[in-house]
Image (cartoon, rainbow, N blue to C red; front, side, top):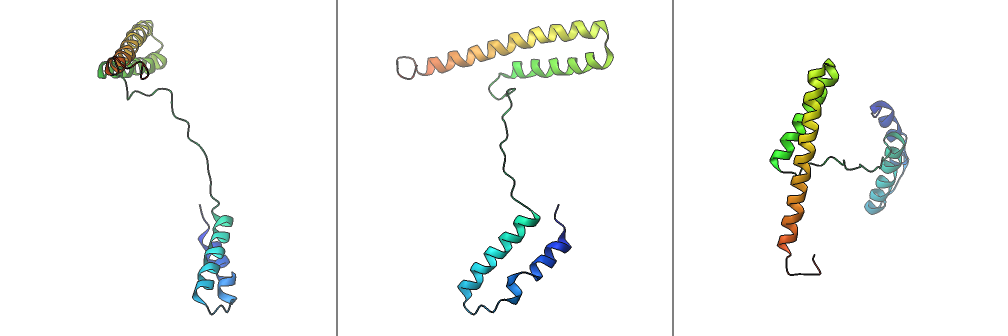
Length: 123
């Protein structure tokens, strides 16, 4: 969060107001330099990388996505209640989701291989 009052004070105290530059191009360059300098003080650029999640469901079939959602829902219920019946339901949903996900991925790989059938380089 930027402190607007100190930012404004630094702008007013910068070389922009006490400089007697007569050429417009030189003033524009001075403006860029001073504003960048003050912004670096008050709001430095942050750079970082976002990691992509390993639980990407875009390539899964609708059935596999639904199975995965059900597994997560039952996991939350099992952790909240701790009941034996919820534990069994969660374990069954885990098995069903795993099978559905594996089938979906296998089907996707098979369809990709079928698309490039006859082309050894693409295979």
